Image 1 (tube, rainbow, N blue to C red):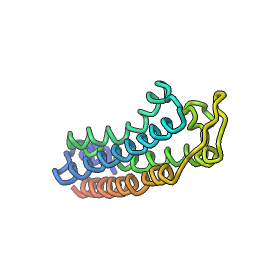
Image 2 (image 1 turned 90 degrees about the vertical axis):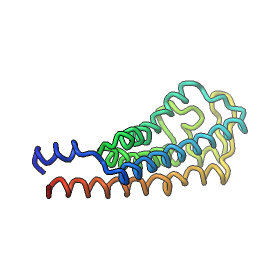
Image 3 (image 1 turned 180 degrees about the vertical axis):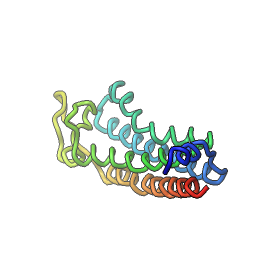
Length: 168
């Protein structure tokens, strides 16, 4: 694709239907993340764990791709398709990676431990935490069917727009 074609593609506004589709994808991803975060609040309440403000702030990073997708779709920017597609992969991958394998960063509080470790029970900062139930597993894996279709849809529209720019 030439620079001229790339510029034409980047300048093109999304049609209403595509913009609406990407807006809905962004909303679905945000809702999926909110539901998962709600489960962490439930876990913390059950454990008597106080979620530090630093974790709340760090957790905002998982909202970046979905919120930018919403903003770009409302602005009818074609980049909403690519940002939504990347978010549809990054969002569930980051949740699955953290909760299946744990984190060595030490930034996620008690959730530095994998769900497998939390099922058995862990000692964290002098307290014992145990309990990842079936609902927590469901609300982890629901990220995949909620977000991956957004990736597929976004990449499909991106490819279509790229092809149209090459032809036009």
